[in-house]
Image (tube, rainbow over all chains, first blue to last red):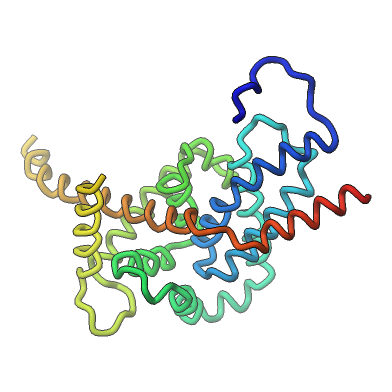
Length: 203
Length: 55
């Protein structure tokens, strides 16, 4: 589709440029939703956040250089939006971390498989900076360098956050260090291992 | 040297677990990516686009 874009073409302007920009932005919506879902842990809040980020990106389209990494650019916008929203509600978040964690989990699809549920729950227990680093690199398809740009920190910082996040996740999943009545510690890790095995057998 | 030998088996086990977590993490993310995008998104974008055209 974008095959004929190589070479020095006349720079796009006005409505034609907007159209190209918009088309690419639309393809990124599913990814913005997914990133927002990981940050907020709540489907409704995530879509609000993703919509805000989408509009912010649209409003700032003139400052975006077509042909550069729009996914990373929009993720950065979304992330900044998330933290500025959160700063505004910092007080309440800080006061009732436990309730926040319950909310993060409560909205999840009750039909979703156990392993995914547990993973979401475990993710929600990680500090935001670790969570975002892990999701960008581990699921979003970003290189460490790109993730560092998105988060506005050094590459080494991203690496250490990802590594700490991985260790912490494993720890949480293995010890069952979350509030889940009636389930034996270690069950989550077992079901994740079994699931991963099944998935890799299919692929 | 001995320590390296001793550590070998648990290390593999740890790697296996990390890989499994990685697979699920991607699945968790991709599940949302593959959801149909709510109409609201395109409506909002369309409205913003129209505003630009008028302004």
